[in-house]
Length: 234
Length: 109
Image 1: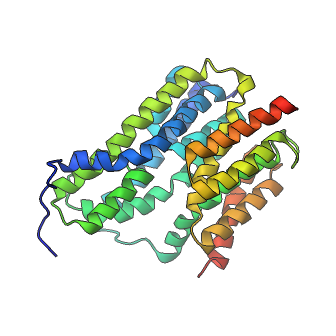
Image 2: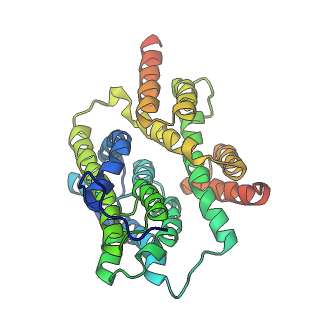
């Protein structure tokens, strides 16, 4: 293993490298953010709340699911539980990043954790695995990737909130919500376990659609998880 | 449009935001005290995105108009968009094909 790597010959610091490594995914993030903003307005949130959702929650799939459920007046506990179940995956990312950030001070841990996303996590673990660089550079790389995504998410969802008030209902743009979930679902189906979990959860959700308070969604997710855990072992 | 009050919605946003941040912070803050996720918990965590996304998605296609209907415009457009999502894993292409088909089917209806 060579010593800590110097900055690459192009002279980019780790922050900029992280930012640049994230650029390819931003093309997909922008329309997703637009739809999250439009969905918040369509759900009936006031504009301050619709603007505040992205800086507060900063998790696209959970925001979209929340807005979908808020629009249907689902029970408050179901709305929060669904968003938190979707975001439970961050515990996994936190565990994977923890060794690399062990020596970080508490304040940087606090705001660094706040901006973890699927995408910035993915590029960071690949980088940390490949290159042995000082803690400050690792954190700078991670923040470059994370803040690139953060900025794009804020701008795109803000644009969605502004547009959302203007778009006519005849355009059926609420259909973009399931389409975004679809584009997120297929990359999440990676092996036998996730395939079984997805199919079982989908069938159960359709069968349980008439459960009160939109509880069918959470019950079906639980059934999918159990099925995937039991029959998904390779 | 929701009938939940603005105060309730602030509460929902606040709890979700705090809970999400605590998930993100969990092991980064606790490392040293807890070092690994138990095997079963890890397996379940890995399954969550696929299960929850499928559970949200499926009824919005099969019950697009409120009742079970596999002939609806949204179900047909959604099924074809699913093939696009599966083959390309591309958000823009999935939204483009799905919305385009829905508009075409609505225009033909």
